Length: 87
Image 1 (cartoon, rainbow, N blue to C red):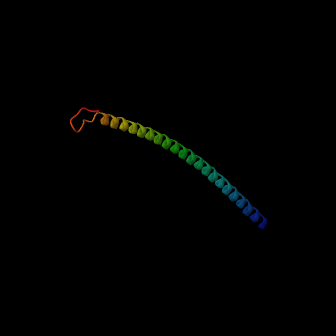
Image 2 (image 1 turned 45 degrees about the horizontal axis):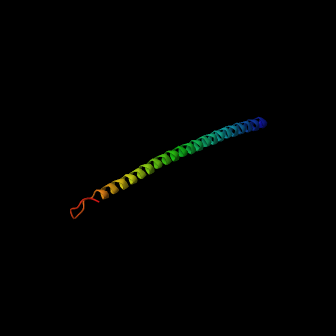
Image 3 (image 1 turned 120 degrees about the vertical axis):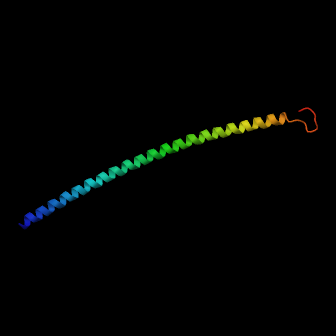
């Protein structure tokens, strides 16, 4: 009878250990999936930010060029303070 009880206890222990290993394996797989998803999302965010920054840089360059053209045009067509013709 003691041998049967020991065998039953060992079988229960082995079964619990097997369930624990399966749960641990599932947790590791979930962790790998989460890490991969995080890496993908971070890469996508970085790419989007680089595109937006490049667009903003180009817009800033266009504004600087427009400012230069406007300043030049205003300087060329400014009336002479003494009443003469513009230079």
